Amino acid sequence: MIDETSKTPPGTDDGTPPQELTPAARRALQEAEARRHDYRRKEAALPREIGGRGGKEPGRYGDWEVKGLTSDF
View: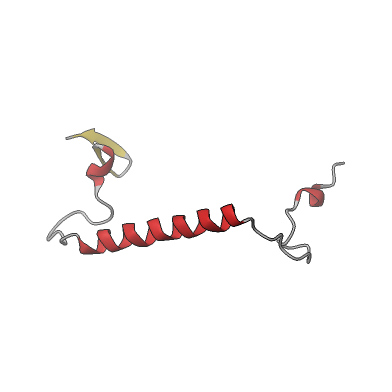
């Protein structure tokens, strides 16, 4: 039997304090959050479609998917 608890990263559920992030890791997390914020801001600025199918813009992947069936447009 293998002890799976030894694979738990520090700072998760085992009560040990989380490891301190390096400056590069903190900077990467800040940049990722800035990209997410920018994406959400741009997405909110797009005009709303009236009478559309709802959800995310299907053309972003180059095809339409409805009920699991994909078709090119």
